Length: 301
Image (tube, rainbow, N blue to C red; front, side, top):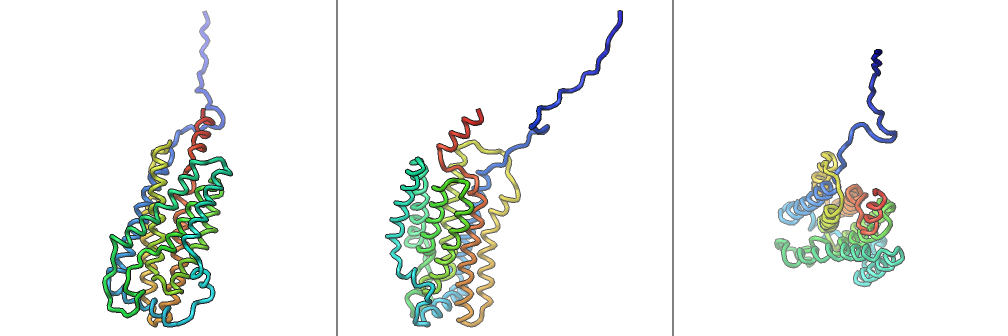
């Protein structure tokens, strides 16, 4: 009887599938790290600029230069003539209209919450938690607490809320384009003598921290990866603090009042844009819309 021996070869994996199964990246971990990094930078800005005598001295020089000019910088005048309450009310109506037009009512509610939450936190911190030590300055603006800036916080919150209610594929572009507007508001607030550099940076950082914290909660309640990516996590933790330290060092090197004034305006715009760009990466793939999550699950089945 003949014995036939045949070679048994392993089955070829189906086309389109990887031989090794890789673990998915956790969006929640990146968002939590970014929220912690923005919050840490917010505290650093307060301690460096508000609680130290050197920081107060430099920034009070900026305010004195802005107020002693006697005239309003032309390009900043529109901010002075803007009614913040009317703007926020109009944005709230726009968010509802966009959500209804997209038939995403729950997404509109989320956007409204992300608009209101950081503004409430900013006012509570400014009025009841944070204080500015008296410096003996005769100028009223230089002595009262203005950290964080309400106008910059509002501009940043409006940008985030609009980016959330728009289709997710347009979110990075909306954040980058709107970041230019936030940068203008930050620089204009300094030019008008309303706020210091730290006030504008603090407003941007606070909204970014609250936004990432809320996004982390949303991400944690939905299917997420289990791999913690070291580079995005470290960037989220350390990059916001680097923005604050760089602004402090550059402003401290300015010697004259005029140089401090110009440096503060430029740094306010650049810091605002930097915070917005740091916010793009963690928010890029977050699904705030419950309907979008349900569609994903049905496609996977």
